[in-house]
Image 1: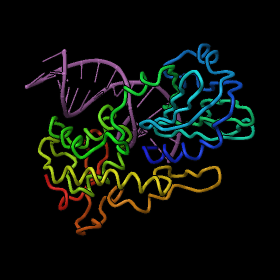
Image 2: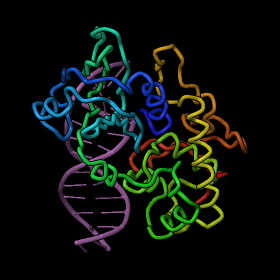
Image 3: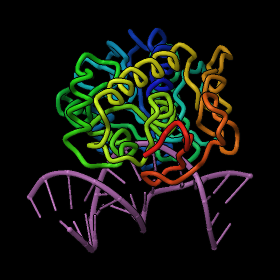
Length: 268
DNA sequence: CCGTTTGTTCTGCC
DNA sequence: GGGCAGAACAAACG
């Protein structure tokens, strides 16, 4: 379940491998892998094009071509990696044949999708503010919370508002800022809002530094796994003592997701 | 069969 | 009609 730090990690690993490569062919193994474009058109528009850059927007890995953009969403179980040969692994959704390697999209549950946009703005405007970008200020967060009456966890998971946070890092950030996941966003004080702002930034930056968390069995091509799992303070700690006050961590449903919090540190 | 996962899409309520 | 909550959905697995 890759979130912002995991997608960022994938991008940083793939970028040197992909920039400068030419797309020779594209093969969709899983018929529904293309999200917003037909196979024939996609083939026509990308074959022979060069990869100029690779970056991240929200939870998308974006290949920048000289005539448009290929955003790839991993959803829950997607993996993107390069390989010298045609892959023999199971659950391959798609393969890009490049100048001197293969780009493999492997996805056990097949929720992941590949998209096509010829205009950056059309893709970009679908997503909210980047929590590590310049627009994510203390003021912005405070107004975004104050101006709505939504459960704060649901608000933070809403990709149209903030782009890139998922279940794990929302729970971590709310614990760190001592905010109950179900509190209505307009009832969050400016002190807590500022604390949340800081928590989100620090947690995401640290998770990136650790190459992310959430790939349970994930290793990169060079065998390095994401190790932020060892830094988690509250997620997946149901029944264990809070690391701040030793109260037993509870698990509830919030925004339809399993949600971990400390009932003493995070009061409504 | 059920629960779990993400983000989109829908339905229904106020 | 907007804002919101919650359910359904796409798929696979244990």
